[in-house]
Image (cartoon, helix red, strand yellow):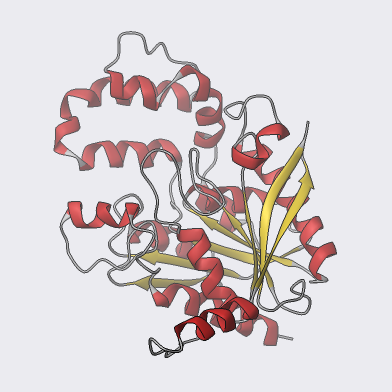
Length: 325
């Protein structure tokens, strides 16, 4: 929805925008305490009759808005939720178990697996259906959240379908190897990194005490259990086993996940729709420059809107699926 506002009418336009959507805080049951989230409905009600989309965050300490304390302030999930609300879709964006407002759900936010997160997806699906009256929920996973969505979809009950955004088509070990090699400055670290990744892929733990500090952070003992669980999953194989509607969205300026990942996912599931968006980066922002510095600058800019093609592609897909017999 586009709003044309002159300076004199700015306040009234802002009031009008606020009236078109409404936020509600939700809770779902967690292992030890509640999981928490924000429902953004396209009107002042609870989102009833609107399709419902669950936004599953990417890796690390990423909050429900798409930000994390490691320098990402793009607010991609909040901006996406607002764009979808303007187009008639309800969204629920969540804090992961053990983090942020969901900190009480488990004692240690690092002591998790992908399947734990998938369990939480189904807890949220039940809450969203009860709150909104939606017959099913779309699982939208961003980056690592796409792998969580795929794991959850192995039990498809309650799911309308999958929306995989900037999601790797390869297992994490292969992704990490590619990311490390993409930066020439990492050359001195590659031998230790390859050895650590290979051992984690085999289900073993790694002694990081003699590693470079950067690798000590990447392979910290506290997260090795999670890395092992993640590396054991092949997203393409999971998608091949899924029979519901699938939309795959990938930007061609993504520094972390490539177009080849979207293509690999698409090849795994012939019925999936693949949308490649030009000049879109990993945090869903439009970046015209090929300079790495300009791309990364968008990670810290919440004032930069998400690329408009993302919300349009999601709405078109959801509406098209609803029209199918």
